Length: 146
Image (cartoon, rainbow, N blue to C red; front, side, top):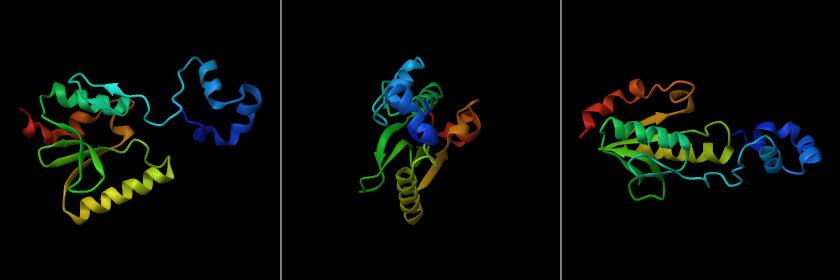
């Protein structure tokens, strides 16, 4: 779903015609998601996911019988990883390059990971769409399966 930021230069036209971005989204036949990450998705193993992309990753891990945890803290910080498999953290950086504050958070996490020599697999939208590359990108996790 495109965000209002994606069409920032057309914002005044959307306001003039539809009164708001969410009304324009509804008129296009979609459900608006006014709060980022407000809609949760339930993976096949019952895990609550913050996005449909995270659900795809979680379901892939479940199908491959790879034991995994969700939303695990990095050491004793407030930062969490999307997934943890054994001693490997897995992050889906789905909004990289789209939101300034998201990129700041991403840099902080990466700095923390580097400083503490933690193992990380970074995933991005092109690892999932238009065709999944998870079999290749997450290949080394098969040794962590049940």
